[in-house]
Image (cartoon, rainbow, N blue to C red; front, top):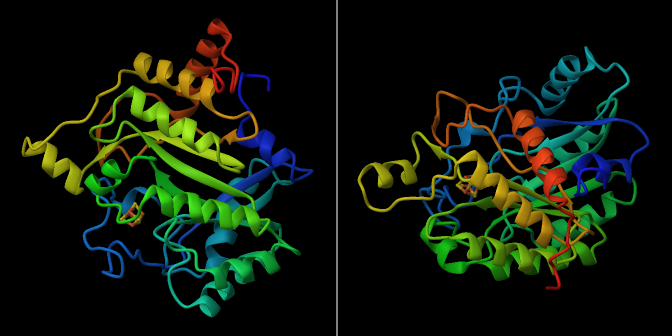
Amino acid sequence: MAQGYRDFAQFLSEHFDCKMQKIAVNAGFTCPNRDGSKGRGGCTYCNNQTFNPAYCTPSQSITDQLEEGKRFFGKKYPDMRYLAYYQAYTNTHGDIDRIMEMYREALSVDKVDGIIIGTRPDCMPDELLTQLAELHKSHWIMIEYGAETAHNNTLDFINRCHSWEDTTDAVMRTHNAGIPCGLHLILGLPGEDESMILDTIKQVSRLPLDTIKLHQLQLVRGTRMAKDIEDGLYNVTHFSVEEYISLCCKVIQLTSPSIAIERFVSQSPDNLLISPRWGLKNYEFTNLLNNAIKKLGVKQGELLNS
Ligand code: SF4
């Protein structure tokens, strides 16, 4: 734990012998919070255009997207191996046979050693989980659920159309199926102060998770949230970099050491991002955070039982 917390690279090194790179694939899934099966209109902060790199469009096959991603990353690191990351929309929503076929396609591509499946916690039927557990006997699989927060009133406000109980249920079933499991969380959702954010981290730390992935709330053009704020209906916390680093240090102190922290920030495309506009690349933010961790002597989980 060189920098005060277990990061994703450390987590991967516990599962793979070589350097691994995720390649995002867009398999053309939809989202149950947009197509009406759970809700309509989507989460108020969501603009799916922010998910995908340029090489990743559903008009290309999964194999072609992965081959293009490999060409891009392989230029610098020829020995790199890969994980296909089903990122955009809800990658477990649809016909189970077709879904499994899409996962198998990625796993049949040369140098692709595993898949990471991003989905909603209310969208993991037992039947699919059983088939994934079977596939996991021969291939590395991880499931990443978008939890966002442990507070149901916030989940209602941002129109997630699922509850925190859906998240805990999905995590427990995935853990019991023997499949590595991560959560995605957003820091700074409307109505949440620091104590609510840290309460989410405490609840997350009690779950049998392998990873968490955090990012600051980003206000993005074309979203319902951006319009509501423009219309003066409510506002959100605008963290300065220093305030957000201080929050991340507290998050680390409350995160169970058994959980790797994949990241703290995300960067939407510049033409879509309204705020915060810190003018920092993700690695520049990480350097600032690592300096603060070192200066303050922050250690993962040190305040978990206080
Ligand atoms: S964030 Fe995910 S669940 Fe919400 S609308 Fe966007 S794709 Fe759907």
